[in-house]
Length: 404
Image 1 (tube, rainbow, N blue to C red):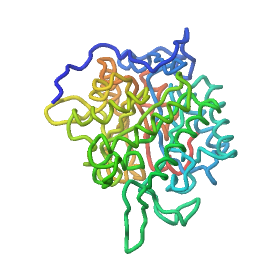
Image 2 (tube, rainbow, N blue to C red):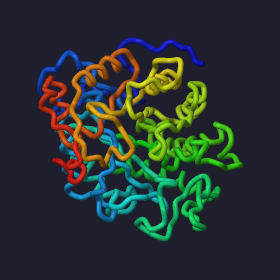
Image 3 (cartoon, one colour):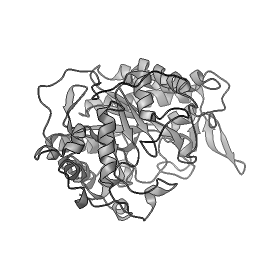
Image 4 (cartoon, one colour):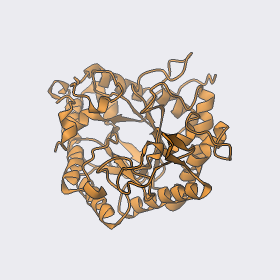
């Protein structure tokens, strides 16, 4: 096992790019900071820009974009989170230009004149409030099934075929299919930079197409994309290289990954720190600037024999900045189907304090916050000012509407 000692002291790693003289103003900069959470409200260099703080809105699917086009309400939804004090927004998953990229109703697309125009309006609204935003570029892979929009006849695409009741519901991707998906990710990233986004995130987690190749259980290929860990990482590396070539040097590439899957919370793409390094180091070399480490609970140890979290291991192995995420500000277990559960969750002040301490000692650089921001756009301001008792807890109702 890797026994390298974790780095100590304040997190200081940054993505590439020049540092502006001062960070932008957001809603969270108006009042003094509660000392217990002060590390979360330090600026952070992100590409060509400086984020006002270390808080990141995690990507969360909302199913509120009919025809794949973000509406006025979607624009207001993102603008409101910047006003509430979040330093960086990552959009909900938005699908690349491939026939099988989508798997769910009314999710936004990231291709076509209307959809990109809608996203440009989102960017302009966020920038007008002094915030920064990146899209999460998404292909759902084997999660898609025939019958789903936009073309019900198209099956899922993945590393290996899946046949159910004699029907091929997932197609094994050919080399041509792989090239097409790689090109679609690159085009989406180029479009993101063209319309003014501040970077782009590649969704490589949770059992979607990139993760389908990484996970041995879903990747049964015998060619150059299957078998060894290095082969299973090849698809992700090709995507990152293509994206890096399609955007400018100062445009950050964020790569989101997870061990767990939507169908299996005990799944692992890496059984040891060494295996994790064999996945992440080639991605860093290919051009990833920031790793977004998706866990059920960000504070839990990643591997037997070490107290260190998956975020801490990722930072140590790659030397890149890391976003940690997983049940921040929630008092309740993250269970299967939890995103649609009707139970409410209470904010745990000590949880946020502990996150600030972990960031200060260098375990990660940015903290992703999800569900609690759906119900309370002002969560960041309330945390900053020590008013966590005023936070509106997450509940099912905040999924049914866009709280603005």
